[in-house]
Figure 1 (cartoon, rainbow, N blue to C red):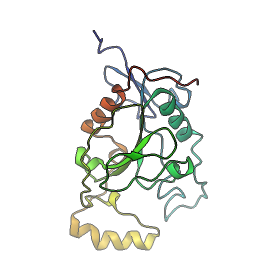
Figure 2 (cartoon, one colour):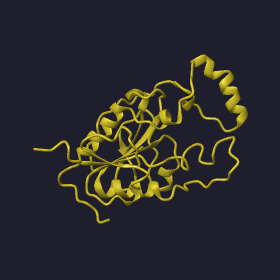
Figure 3 (cartoon, rainbow, N blue to C red):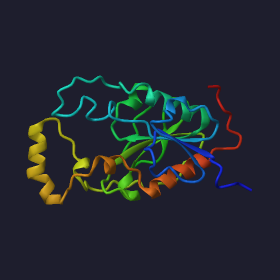
Figure 4 (cartoon, one colour):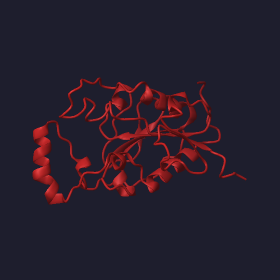
Length: 219
């Protein structure tokens, strides 16, 4: 009989005290530093996306020059853990990290497809279909686990998080025209990064579906 108090999934790069701090999950936050995870449990990985996403350069108001992919090796570590242990990795839609690491871009409204890297499968899913206030399009990369049939629909924009802009002028124009029409509000940084409970449970279920015959790779 499985003891629910004993962690059987490792959650990597998660918020301290957040939704993954529950029985049965071994959470690795910034204090524990998930880059050094060496366990053998399947993983759910949420590596930081700031230097890989649409605003890797800091956004239209940034004054400091930043480097694309400069995340101290977090994404590479998360990817290695998923490939070694089995599990699922989550990152925002349209990030550059997938292409950088040889993973194919998933399409909207499509099923799971081969990642093209010889390891995993990918898909695009909206967290808005699983409880997030924004539609929050998300790419998933899964290795060695069951691939569930998800809600593949793409809801319309629900918040300012769902719109991109590349200059201060574009941002001002969006706030003055688009936002009032869709009643879009600015989410807090914590809300932007949050994982809805139903989506968390989905990712944990996937990780726990790792085949008993999964062959662990050497670290």
